[in-house]
Image 1 (cartoon, helix red, strand yellow):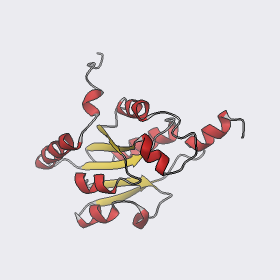
Image 2 (cartoon, rainbow, N blue to C red):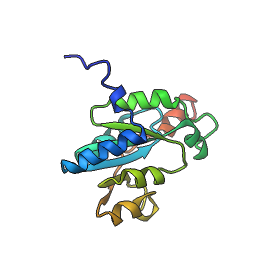
Image 3 (cartoon, rainbow, N blue to C red):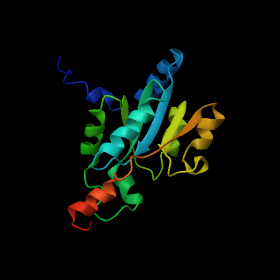
Length: 166
């Protein structure tokens, strides 16, 4: 059975839609998980990370750095390699991702404050106290989970390989 053409577009959320959805999920006792990133050149490490993030709850919301936000992170002059439209559609196509929401700020702190997720997930290369929004989630009785990365997979490494630098 093919997915309805509207399937992916239903995963793109405005803040108003997120507010209503969050109320519904809370009413039904569903655990909301939030993670974020640039997800430029989606690879095995990203897919593994997102699957692990989804396993911590019932509904995975991915905060996606907009193109402007990626520029603020100064990941390099050519980044993002794919625009936010492309990156958001690739994420939305993944079964484990329930919603994608763009944010323009350097960190998703305000988005986390707005969503009030039950679980906040980041890579194990962070310490809990370094994660934007950890204070909000913990103060609300939620958890912060750290996920180990699959060794050898990163967008930066792929970019270097393409350029012949590896």
